[in-house]
Length: 74
Image 1 (cartoon, helix red, strand yellow):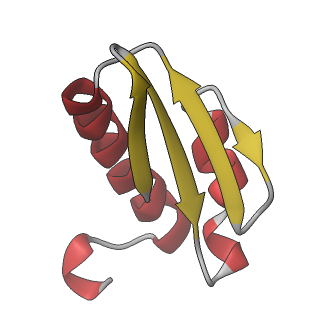
Image 2 (image 1 turned 135 degrees about the vertical axis):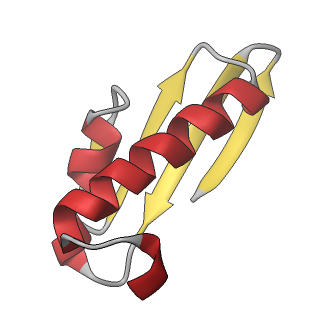
């Protein structure tokens, strides 16, 4: 995950995964973006701190759904 606030209140995120089964495109789509299974991105009109929290929460839910597990076994 890479987050960049390119203008005040506008942040973009880039997602990459070595394992295409983790479906970065679906994760990005849940944040209003898109891309490919292993590489995707999104843009949101939020400042970096807010987007960071939203993204981490969304990633947590996404990984739990993909892997059917908790962080302790990631």
